[in-house]
Image (cartoon, rainbow, N blue to C red; front, side):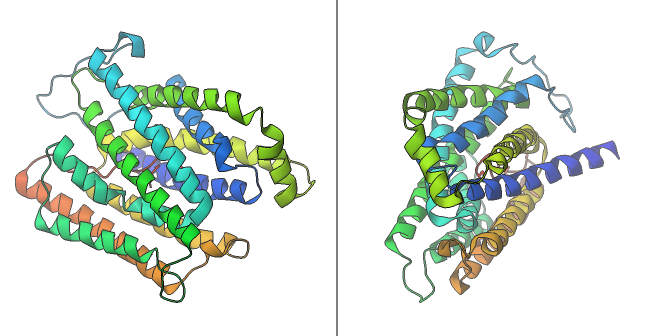
Length: 354
């Protein structure tokens, strides 16, 4: 019973924190308090990951029989050179993915952003084949093709033609960010399986500390010197001279949500199966998609629903679920560990990721 309750709680926290962090980030963009050039929201996300180090690692739900457990390194500096190198590579891709996704989110809005990000499984399938030596069966590849078609539909506007050039650019930028996130997910999975590798909390805090340090340097060198034009003037333009209390509250909530998302992310990555993680990915995409239309359509036309966006959402979600089910079937046939479908830490995640 304890296992079932723990699993439910962690998955619920991961899902809800992913949904609301994306929506809050979108709201901060709308009021001018999170210009993409400041990367403040990116910094807050990694700060949330970094503070995981002050909390104990959640217990594993199970340990494979006859497995040999090696002690994790006591600190990053005492870890092996292979682990250090892996953390730095993952951090580089993580920061690049987050910056690209933040720019994409500010252009296309949180709804279609989340749908595109749910398609991370397409690139995850490809990279897993070459990095983790995983093979896909025909059902999985059909699901991947279906997701790709759904992503293509997201670029169609109300009149059945390609959407505006700026939105199309935002979609392309978001796709590039999604590709980078896929590399992060696959490398994370590989890294967590290294003999004597870091715990889930160590992995999260090390990446968060490294990435937040990079962001902090950028903020000191660029954001702070341009604080008036990048933040104050834009807030006055979109939010007026109202007290900034709500903005401060949003950032505090965002930090808390990113911490919860990061803390549960690596546990789910290590313990949950393909079906469960796929369902969470699909639920997050659908929820953010429709919530964004409901809350932000009046102030941003890019957030409004169209028949093609709905079809895109349904195609991507169906593809993710089918891929998850196919992964479980493949596990039962091959009697190997199931493929994981990692979810984004981001703005929105975005995992995120989902």
